[in-house]
Length: 613
Image (cartoon, rainbow, N blue to C red; front, side, top):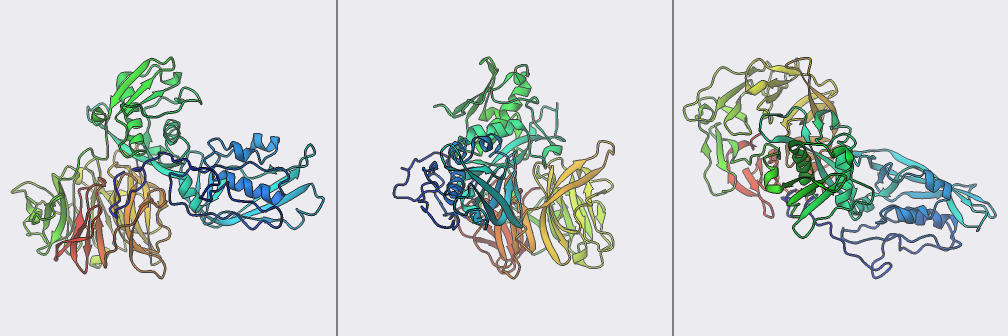
């Protein structure tokens, strides 16, 4: 991913090189913290560690450690960079070590878990002890590395026994997976996009296949390249699985458990696969390699220039370079927007070149730029050949070509809403060339789809939303949709999955909506700002308006939020993160924010900024 427009790097585009620090040196590292010789267990402090390059090593239990020290040492070992949790396993009995699965899940708490000794568990002479682990849940990462926000109180228990053989305390009962505080999670894990192909994308047409990002979390200092490729081969996360496909044959894995992937001096990565991939043909193999290239691009600052796939016997299956990957798989639409668009003071659709801040905005070619139909919002198709405009009163939706002399036909959608705020939202185009818009008519609220921007509007079923849609933005991949949903006076940002019915030629559904900014009580504007990232304008309960980035899985990307901007009404971003944010501020009009800079005024009188899409 590109640089955060706030100036700092964001997820993916940062180095995962390792700096090894001496254990217990000038820095106090988790696992090297001193443990009390006696007394009650006061909890494991989770110290913020902004330097993700630091390696943290756990310490094994020392002879004669108390039950409290064993629990504390074990929890600290979970936050170390021990690849296979071998040191953590030394705090367990032999039987517990065989049944404990640290890869089952990762539970993230607001602070480090707070162990509390049970009243009857630590009496003198006792051979058993019990500690409760308490905390406030923030999220959970499952066995497929998928992140999911969580809430409520966490409660787990750790049971210990004193071994007969050497009189040492060891843990013989504990929850599956690992648990840690937020700051340790941020140091230990990095978010990376895996890539799959959209199930409803073109096949056999000669066009590149559309890709879909599937964000997951892997351990940042524990061979992340090998981890993410193994996760890619395992398949998509469960939420995304119904609408994407992988080119890897079922059961494909790395050749063996000892494989470690890393670029050579030519920035090429060789990936040895097991026998399940031995017989794939050239086109399928290149698709497989394209998935790996796109996935590894997120993991290092420069990505990978070439991927070689090998059969189980070590012979070459295929080779794909980064340059040739573009002909196999398209990233988003595969095209970069030429213009930014907005509605000017004459209520016309105008445009300005994306990379030239000094260029005067000009009306778009065609009827929507002539001003005959007064507009309040618009959307431009991803190929920038067609646009849709909402009339100034919000009642009518027009579609017209962006060519000189182009005319407008009758409205393709009419709303019967009683007021302008109860009528049509800003529309959105998907990668298939279909047009989406929500009608906010309180008597008949609907999400509508017009195939290729024309014909009879299709009512999209979205029974799980439970509220009225206030804004619509379809992702470049065409299988995810961002919605602002109003219910009981509050508005939330939700991501839904677009599923199309095979039995109904024109059936479409929004399935599995997930809230991705639950901390915001009021969401007023949003836009896609990357493959798996959105920029959101909203406020927390009792708070002031703020602008921030959020991931589609509900996590918060590393890096700074966009610079503050007062009275933001609308926001536009491109999936190409190198392009600036564009916003409509009631105070400053149309403004633009490029990476590493401050907001710059474009025009005082203008509204409804959009990028193609």
